[in-house]
Length: 322
Image (cartoon, rainbow, N blue to C red; front, side):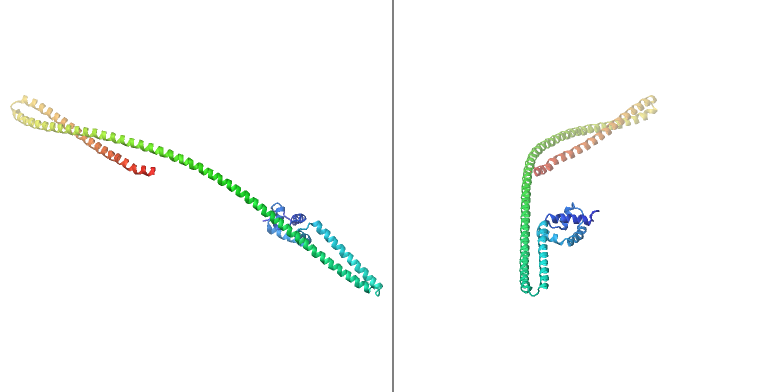
């Protein structure tokens, strides 16, 4: 869409200025002269109308002839035309006044006029030739200027691209050196980390084995204590059985000795309490033994996991080093 305010007067003024400067008035040059405003579809019909009204100036601008030179040529041509017409009119009057005298003069005059026409055509042909040569020369100079500008632009572009490539190569070299330093630092850190991990694994394995050995010893002690308690329980049960038998015997004799019955009951009650205490101790020992067995199983599982970790870490370490 054209910018508001683009009128025929603006287009005509820009075209006239371009023509006066010896430039060809086109849609692009007129739009550029207008400051890059206005659409081509709006400027084109206005420029076509102006060219139709100024065909001479447009032809001169297309040929590369300055406007003042064209006006001078047109003045000379008009004066020659006027002079020729005046001479013809004078000859016609003289012919009418003295027809018998002007026969030869008329022929000579017609010959002169013919010669003048020939000279005029020659001058016109020469003028067209000069204008064409001037246009060709101007076009050749313009093409040379465009070619030179293109070569200079290409040269500047190549120089800039060369500078950019040099900067990129320098930057890549810096990045490569930094990457090498980081890789060396990573290798050193990986080696140190592997040594630390290995030492930590060995320490944990040794600690776990030591703790497992201690738990095994405790478990063995618990088993031995349990065996002792079981032996004591058997002895107590045997003693209780004997005491019960004795109590029955004493009960049988209760009828015979009332006083002895009370003492026997107290003794049986005391033995029963001792037996219950032994049973309770045995239950506690059995529970402690179960906890020890569970802890030993847990430590054995952790020990197996710790032994597996260094084996699993070794392929990863070799892969990282590679």
